[in-house]
Image (tube, rainbow, N blue to C red; front, side):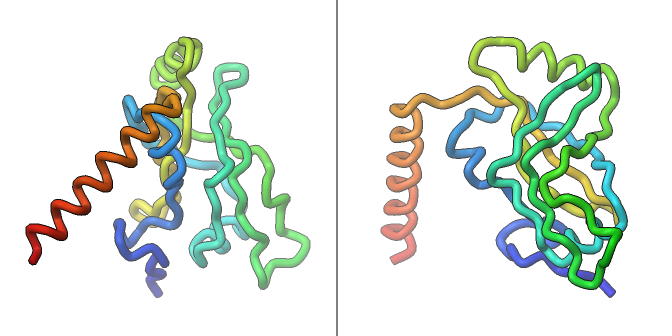
Length: 157
């Protein structure tokens, strides 16, 4: 049985996206990371019960973690359900983690999760090294998006 994601605009294997990240940050470079999960968390994610809105990544002791990612408890699970907001380890190559750590140490840079998706039956997380936008940058982005939308409407007539 194949589960189709609720967000049909993106890839059908996408479980959740962090739309706020592209509004708040300039995305410099993206990476793919595996996530260490419990069994009931995977089942819950396949049902689409995951939220990345307040999630962020941190590096501790040379290991990469995601914090604030909410995975709702699995409905049919019992004592095996875990804390929905627990810190989860991300799996990446050491040199990629060191590259992310260098970027994060620069002024204004951070590591943000972009999306959670299924890749060959495994749950993967797309993360990015990103630079924070100022208020005027956000306004500029909104202005460009509105102009492109208006042009598209005008051309489609």
